[in-house]
Each structure stands twice: as C-alpha cells, then as structure tokens.
Image (tube, rainbow, N blue to C red; front, side):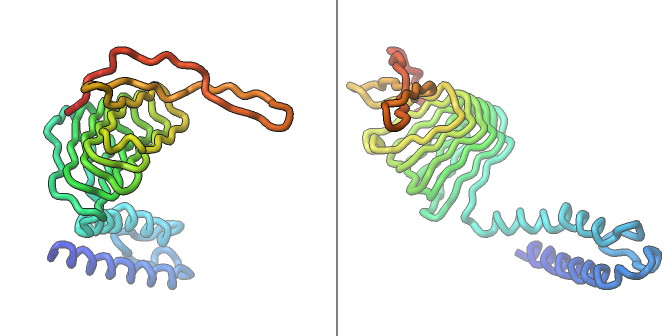
Length: 226
C-alpha cells in the first residue's frame, strides 16, 4: 500500500508539471525546461505526455487493478498444468491472456471468465453467474462442473466444451469460429455434438430463411479435463 501511495504522489507531481508545460507552450522550446524527463523539442508537451502514459500511468493502472481485487489475471503462462484460483468471490472476474499449453482450475463462483489469445489451453471451473468468453484463441478445452448461463466463442479455431448436468440449459453463442464441439453427459460418458459452422439460406417467397447444414455426430469425443 505504501508503494501505491508513493506512485500516486509521483503521478500527481508529474501531471502538475505537464499542465505547466502545456500552459507555457508558447515559450521557445529551450525555455520549457525538463518535464517528466523530457526537454525541448518541437512538441515537448506531446512527448512528455507519451512518456507519462507509457511509464507511471501504466504502472498505476496495473497496480490499482490488482489492489481492487475484482480482476484475477493469469498472463503469459507456458506449460503450466498446476494453475488454480481457489479463493473466489461473486464479483470476481477472471481474465486469462496468452497462456499456452496450460490448464487452469477456478473453484467456487465467479462473475465471468475471459480466455483471450490462448493456445492449447484447458479451463475447469465450478460456476459463473455471467458469461464465459473465448476470444482469438486456438485449441481450447473447457469443462463446466456447475452452472453457467452463456458461453461465447469468437474468432476461435477449435473449442471443446464439456457441460455438466446442471449446465445443460447454457446458451452457446459463436461467431467467426470453427471446430466447436459441445459434449453432453450421456449414460455415464459424454456424447459430442458439433456446433454448426455452415448454413444454407433460401428465399421462401416472403423472407430469407437460414438454417444449419447437416453435420455428422462424432462417436469418440475427447476425454474431459477433470
């Protein structure tokens, strides 16, 4: 907390100096002095602002997000199968970014979960009261142990979702994605149902009617993560 307070004070001083620079921008560059480590130049206020945004402001935003406690992040994990979030709250949001060849387990109930830019990533979670989203990813496996109202798949290639008995009313929303499969509990095992990727559209005399094309059901689904 002391580190955060010191960062805020440095940020306030830098912003104050930046305001002085902007107010005195009519002066010649040589008279502007040093503002946040930047001296002179054709547009010193712009240069100083860029440096401020790339330095202390970015650090401040990162630390404030962590201290808020609402966002649990896992970023840039590689070859990790022991990732666990065990202490969760209803307001909590889990954000997983650029994790490859790894598996994460989320226990308890969270607000929402986002998987972004991940490859060969596995997620096992208990409950989510909001949306679980997969974006810009490849080869994702997800297992729902409890309930989730909506799962969204966007710009993703390869996504297998194992639903629990309690999650069979979950809505799957997909766009610009391929190789999506939903696995349903079936006689003590799972049965795989592909999410349609191809559609046919025809004119019925008054409007366009679109429906998915026929897809074969796989007899050998992959094994669940848990």
